[in-house]
Image (tube, rainbow, N blue to C red; front, side, top):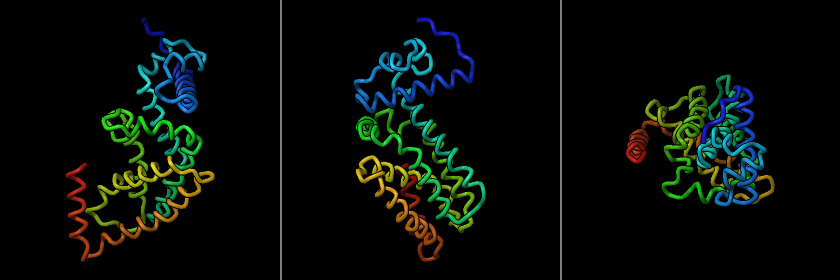
Length: 224
């Protein structure tokens, strides 16, 4: 099948967003397995060839969804992180901003998570295919660390953004299963977890705990 001519940039981005939004709605309504590229194209009102031009497969489409969520999160929180500030305040901004962006997708997330958590799935947030979205998310958390006015142990600093991303993944998994109104319990989790993380980061600077911190980081690097 011949590929259609490349659309103008602005129109192309709008079409890509239309395809992603349509796919997310269909994933929510009928599940990932039952949703086809043909069905997405029909629902979006475009040709099947045009859908495949932008996304060679459903997996590519989901990766774009991941990237869109991370870009929207970055756009929401980066202005709030423009000025340096205490570590705990900056971390709360980043985690709350992520939750705000993800909230419209909560009904869909529960159906999608089964596919994403399968070992070896390209849709896993830990997969090579998810690397661009994962790195974008870690970049935001790196900004949290670099703009912190709270002193952070030098040996911990390079690994801290990735460790925060792992904590963020735990919060995301809890959010997927959170049936409280407006996911209020996840908001509570963030409010209570941030001071704990801040305390752990501060404790890492204590002379008596530096060796323990070093061993914990060594283990993390071995398992990375």
